[in-house]
Every structure is written in structure tokens, then in C-alpha cells.
Image 1 (cartoon, helix red, strand yellow):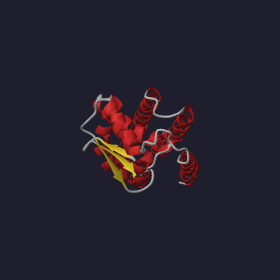
Image 2: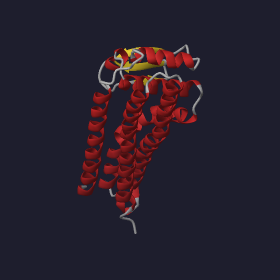
Image 3: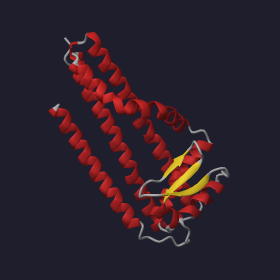
Image 4: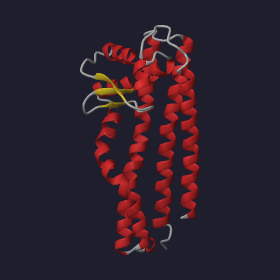
Length: 231
């Protein structure tokens, strides 16, 4: 277990560093005011309209960095600061979330796969590690008996969460690429504002990358515990 705690500690440290850097970047680019004077809400509504999407509502949601697209009720949810402010950071986030709406409208395959996994992962992710640990307690490392199959079930559940994390990567990177391409093509931002938007989205994407690496590392660690003790 000590090795697991060291692994999780290292991943948590990297995640904290990336998250802190992301917050600093957004604070920095929140001070770069848009020359066009548009708010995050107005940016989002324009990007949706430019892509022929009129059945998606842009709404404000409480909190910081709580921005997301909800495909179930077709809403672009922008945090209060992004929704109201008129800077490079809010433009980047608003356009990124609209990138997901465009993905949905165009039936982007990776988004469909991620959406299909959501109900599975929401049920299995919370119990996966406990199943593996329980299986090991019951003797899973010996490769026989009930404990082994309990641990294997836990690894399978953990595998779904890991798969979800990796499918999320192309979904997020593609949404950012769509956002930046639209911001540039429609001259929504100046070159300086564009650089700020690009940098902010780059660091946002890195949080998903760290999460995916962490999920894979955890899966491999527990798989080694279950299968590594077998002759």
C-alpha cells in the first residue's frame, strides 16, 4: 500500500501544480480586456449562431471554473465571471464550451462515446477501488477463489473510468481547437487576446491529461497487485 500512497501523492502534487498554474493563467488573462467589448455570454451566443445552432441556451452557473456543456438539456453553462466579463479568458472558455455544442450538433464520435460511458462510470467509479482491495483481502493475489473474481470486477470497473479519462482528451482538445479556429476566423480577438485565449485553453487541457495519466497509473498499480503475486 505504501507504493500506492506514494503514486497517488505524486499525481496529486502534479495535479495541484497544474491546477494552480491554470488559475494563475486565467487570472492573468482576465485582465486582458476584449477590444470588441463582448461578454462571455455574447461570445457564446455568436459562436452558436455562426455554426447554425439555435436550440442551445447559454446560461449562468454559480462558482469558478464550473463551465460546461450539458448535452442532455442542450445548455452552455458559463460560470458567473465568464458569463458577464469581457476579457480573453472569458472568450476562451465561452468558445470552448460552445465547441462541445458544435461537437454534439455534428455528432462528433468521441463525444458520443464519452456520453455513453457517463452512466456506467457514475455507478462503477465509486466502488471499483473498494472491490479490488476487498478482493485482495480475500486472497485475490493467489489467483483463485471468490477474492480473485471480486478484484477482477473492480479492475474492470476501474478500466471504464480510465477509458473515460482518455476518451475525454480528444473531446477537450477538439473543443479547444474549434474555439480557437472560430475566434481567429471571425476576428473576434486581437493577436494579443488570441495568445491569451490559446494559453489559457492549453493549461485547461493539461488538467485532463494529468487526470488521464493518474487514472491509468492507478489501474496499472492495482492490476499489478492482483496479478503480480500469481505464479
